[in-house]
Length: 216
Image (tube, rainbow, N blue to C red; front, top):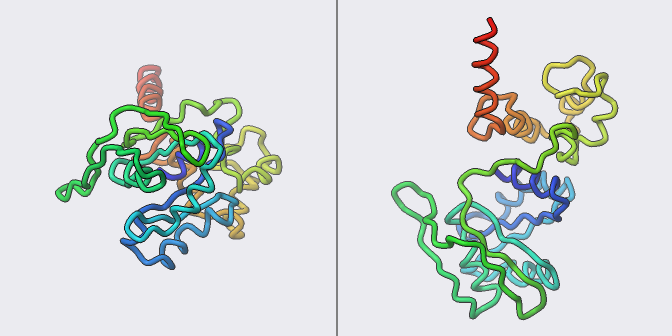
């Protein structure tokens, strides 16, 4: 899901900032180790907790004099975090459902709010699934993975999907450790090349399969 958010931001020419909230529930060293890949790719990562107050001032600095949108799954603490970033907003908040370990929808509409320290922020409802309508089919998905960009021109085929084609520079980079296997796996899932819950064009793929069956 994080990679889908990043791809959407890249395709929309929006500067993404990864905010890892509720840091009080985990060891910082472990969380930072998990996110080090994204920091190495050049993404800004802010670690926050409304319980300890860590990272709140850094997040203010990131948002100052800008128009920002806080997006993420239900229950990650978006509204609660904004209430701490700017006390007085009084945004509705809710508890995580202990039965299914998922957040409840407390924010039901997008609200653009002015910030006292400069700028605006949009508080958004929690997202369960995220489509990629911004992706240009001709341009391709791979261009929105920063680590792949320098290798794409080196592939033997101009329309290389980096899945099964020979002489694929992206796959060579994975083998040499220059591209993370986890990010490549995510690329395949989002592309729809690999069965998984984050497939990009599930409905279209089903239609294509049915069309091929009828032709046979």
